[in-house]
Length: 414
Ligand SMILES: [Fe+2]
Image (cartoon, rainbow, N blue to C red; front, side, top):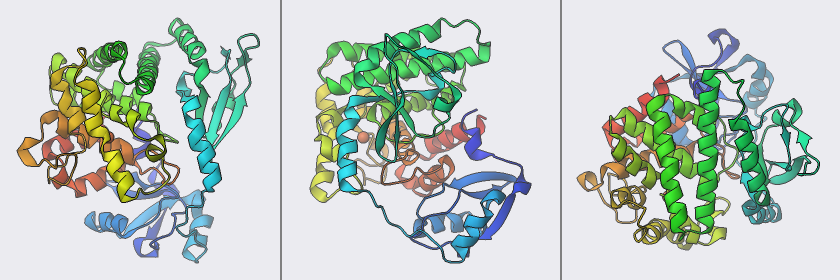
């Protein structure tokens, strides 16, 4: 399963130990860092993550004095220990970032697993890496091009032009009819196709947040997601990407919906309740569509005024959805309360304890986890294991039983 790679990796003997005290605050880690738990190596920190006192606290809490790295990284680790370190600096050229941010809306992030090697596409593929978009495969309806290994093995986010969404949809339909896939593989492809169509619907609704027709379509997508999760409870791992290179609200929305439904299912919710939970989770960030785009996309930290603006997305979301006849009232707490914390330090209402509803408790956990595990231009993604460790450390913010269920769901199904 997809997340297995993050939790249990290679045989223990290809790792070398390193003392925690050799890590230096404010520096970037030169390689992935592992901890040994019950004889299994677990990826705790990603390469490039800035080592900070908070990370050290997590290690102390776990009573870890020795960490591990993969043997093939020996040279960079020795250089690091000898003092050749990359200090905390985020050198993003503002002009490059502006160009990247302004172009983002013209592209759509596609699922690379659905780009089948040996198949032909009638649209161009682009690669987003280091904040630059570049042509990866040139093609048109008249002159299709074949997808080969070289295209699929390049690291980075694969995108298409927004104008080519119709052709991409047709390509997805053609995959649906491929008959030669074994059963296991075909469920995975089906799950990813549902995910792609959900992303397309959410992208459209973010562009036109008042469209009643699109809200109805979100309902259809959720029905399919619930169907899949009832059919095969590990489908979650088919649908979640192992590595996300950048943050897109539509991908985040679908991932939060999929994980929320899977978590609700693990908590034995009935189908009707799962659909309502999924609907709210899928549209939890719809209010971002009416917030200033420059603030939503801003590089790095926000100042107070900008933070206040961002926080408005919750009530804006409620405002957009409350008159939608196809949006169930019972789904609203997922939208209204996904940034509330049980300690009362969340927003917009600062609710605490029992007042936070079940859907609010679920979506706040899933939303936070997805945000932590996603790469941003100014922040490396945290590993699933570190993200869960952070959340467990802040567990007073979350419903303890639901968080435990969530950790088990992500940790055990592999
Ligand atoms: Fe949000």
